[in-house]
Amino acid sequence: MSFIMPSLFLFFLLFVPSTLIMAAPFCIEDKGLSQECYYYDVNQCRKEASKISGYCAINREEVAMTKGNGSFCLVDSSLIPQCYYEEAQVCEEEAIRRGAVCFENIKKERSDAFREERDSFRHKTER
Image (tube, rainbow, N blue to C red; front, side):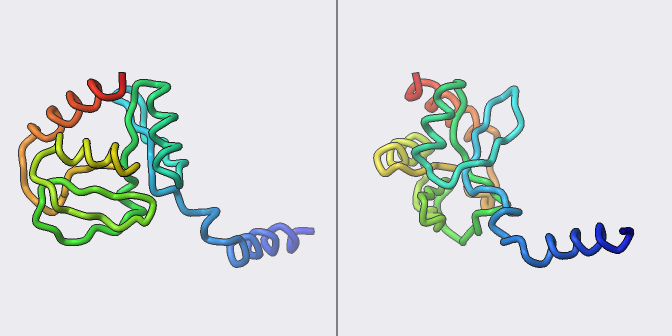
């Protein structure tokens, strides 16, 4: 009997698909909550986020960052970041139009002004 439990655990680790272990690429964020990364579809993430006055964001552990010159990046269900945007509002408007998510390009240095601008714009458009 003592051999069965470790064997089952080892079987689970070796044969359960890695997709069940990995977190989803899109998360709901809200100032009062931790990230909820359950979404593989951007539009579903946006829909659920609007129900709690939150917003849909990328899971940085699941989306591979690429180099780009823009201060802001857009990513859709293809999970390929497109870092072409210098203004948060332009990026966010394009994200809404294309069913994508806009986020800060972490490979560039900046102040907290981005977060304030992004949050201000998101709260205007999600109401």
